[in-house]
Length: 329
Image (tube, rainbow, N blue to C red; front, side, top):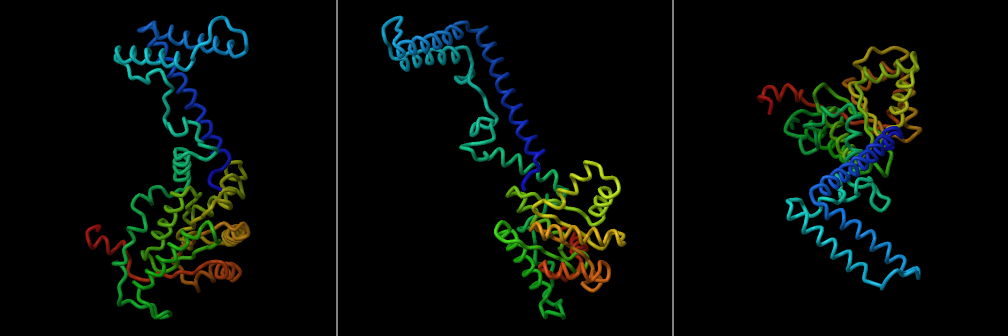
């Protein structure tokens, strides 16, 4: 699901308005040119008359001798072009002008979405993702392993912080590459500032650029949205709730920073469980240890996550602090 039906309909209305505007602009150009060069109107009438006369000849109702219609139209068109140029107009001044010449502002070419339509979809997806600001400087090419020290070792795996980050980066790349072919969820955990959100945003950017629907929520905003839908039940909140459950990728960031209670725990389970059933991918990031995560959200939630998510731990020193020390570089 790239766009909701209402968003698709809005795009199609945009193209319809564009076509109407193109026709209006063309009519205005023709009116102006006819006023300045009256012969242009005569030429168009002669082309129409010649076409009608040729049709009658073909139907066996000749009003005169047969003639070469294409040659006649070509002669008149050449005269029209000469008149336009001699009066300072472009040769194509009277033709329909399109914002996208490829699809002629229909959005489709041979029943396939035009590149302009795909760009419009991408723009819509970026707007609704809640993550546009975070993506300006976020990409896999900007993910630097230099912030992960070789001499910091994960005692449970024996791997260095840098090697651990390399593996996480590769899994993120694999997640994007296989997104349309296999169902997978990711669970990033580790200390503050170790790149969990950054990697999530790298994935989001790649998928948004390939017109997948991605939506980002901090844990606090996600559970606030669930509460609004549960206790107010407006059409807008229901629409948001449906989209949370059905978008191609849901990113839940900073899990554990929200005020946790039985409502939050139950909504969290319902959300991840429903998306698993629908085979819609989810990325979760948290600063909680796995033990704290289980204590906070119950064994049932922990069991569902641990069995359905690829667990990726990042270790290291806070990258934001390192950047400040280095003067923002």
